[in-house]
Image (cartoon, rainbow, N blue to C red; front, side, top):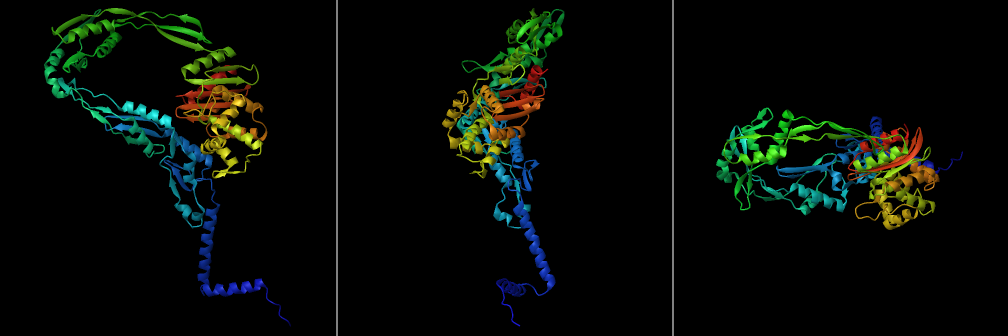
Length: 584
């Protein structure tokens, strides 16, 4: 009987079997242990290879917060929250310090770079068993960059605050004795040095970074040794017994009070002389007025929609004539005789005024409220109802100010145009993701690298020309010296065009609306509104903005609120009042 020829598979199996027993241990239990170890480590490597590439590592964290398995958007929001809490403290030894928020120095977080640190798990590490358990990453130091002009102004302001004149020695009463308060040297701080120190400092994320600033010290002109010549004069002044007669009441300030009225100054010749602190005397007289004066009433003025509609006048009050009596005391304190009596004169005190502003639930009331809040709270507001009475209101809405991240709406407009022309595709690679991934980061996480990449790609002047050709004002610009800028009116115009499809339509519109409806920064208009909100926020330095499409149960409207020195809580409160007026 003929034997069938061996196939290549048979030959391979024979070769494998021969080599397997050649290199493996003879005892079966040892072979089993080897296979168990092989499968165990293979499973670990497989798990490491399967770990999501855009999620926080198992041991990733920010100070005080774990980011294990956090998504890109969750890490971005956590970083922004920690950045907002970061502070700078500039100190001049133990003499003086200034503490301020990091973003007031013109800083912005490089969010994407910090996200990379929290999620970076390269392939070579994934192929080494157990490295996932050693991937301990805590981002303590902030990756930031500064606006040059903003940082220069900040350094200039802080150098002025940390520079102060020397303080001469002063007299004071302690334990019923006349003593001298020691002099303090002055400080001169170089703004360029402050700029250099801040630029080079390692910033602690979510904490206070302390920077010791060198200064040129200026000695005081008058030290405690120079007080000997006027010590006797000061004792004589303190020996005064002063009586103030106010109607049927009499008051005599004690030595401690008298000492607070005395100042040590230097005249034009550099000689140390005694003088009187008129403000301290006035403060004392104001305390007396609480005992002998008659408080004035309150005049209440009712204002409806910006116009006075009623007034109730308060009663006149009565008080010691502070200026006159203070002048009398200043003249007698440093000269004989040691016993002095001063009769206090009185004057009428006009009633205080309280303005009670009210706003009717009318378009007139809405416009009056917007006018008042824009000027009193440093806001720029633009509102347009889309149905119903189609009310509109705007105040300071054409002022061009740094736009924060709201500029990304205009970048998206140019991007949509390039996509519609087929020049860019959503699946095209970009940075460490795709165009679609970058769009998500720009509009949801609101990080900057993708937006800045597109600005560099399109060109700032081209973006300006593009948006201006579509009816937006020159107040929206990417070519300003300090930052990208826009206006409340332009942002409202944009959201109107997005809502009705005249500016952005089709799939592009759906994609953008989706992003504006699910981003994590919903503390402004969405918090204050009773409706469904699609909005884009912007925050840069001390600028905080929100522009939104609002679908309220009683109507639909577009609103933009741009602020300086305010908060999202202020935007939310303003939104509540506006909706109370529009939809009672």
